[in-house]
Amino acid sequence: MHLSLDQAQTIVAAALKEGRSLGLKPISVVVLDAGGHMTAFAREDNSSNLRPQIATAKASCALAGIAAAGLSA
View 1 (tube, helix red, strand yellow):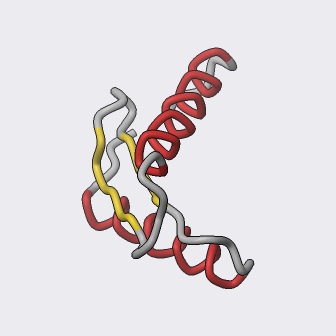
View 2 (cartoon, rainbow, N blue to C red):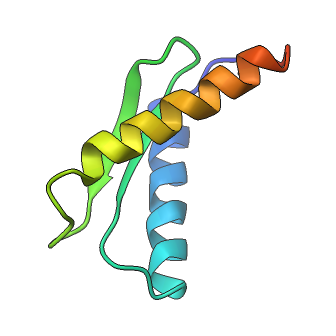
């Protein structure tokens, strides 16, 4: 499945909005394509230094889970 930049940016915006609505500390959001390449990224002001790496690792694990389940991304 192809993920356009516009779609990836929409996902990032929705995730940031949800984080704020939940009252979370500043977050970072990464969207990867099916090949694991970064398509979009955003880091809120005052987000901790490791948040980008954590967000990337979580997105990678999600892709691995999709692949392990025999689904397509």
